[in-house]
Image (tube, rainbow, N blue to C red; front, top):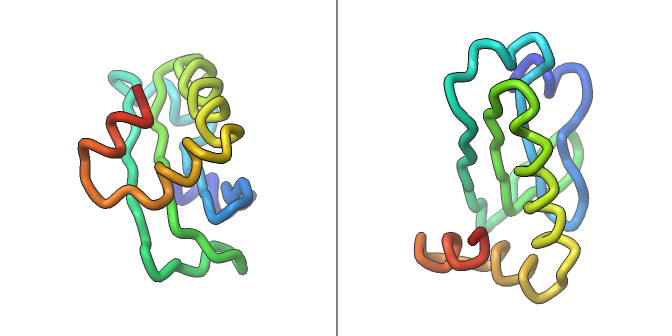
Length: 97
């Protein structure tokens, strides 16, 4: 993820970053997974203010369905807001499922 971030920022807008590994690292991932980190006060992400970080680790092409599902959520203003403002794990899970 750090190698990818040094190449190009994974900031996608609206206070969201989606860090992920490089193509070369896909073979070392054992299974697809995500992590969600909220920064209520925001953090500097390559010059942008990020309040929600969704990290992706994907084996082979597993990132494609993960990104598609995440895009559906982030393109829906209400769901995106709910995810950005979630304070409980149950709220995050509700938006991601």
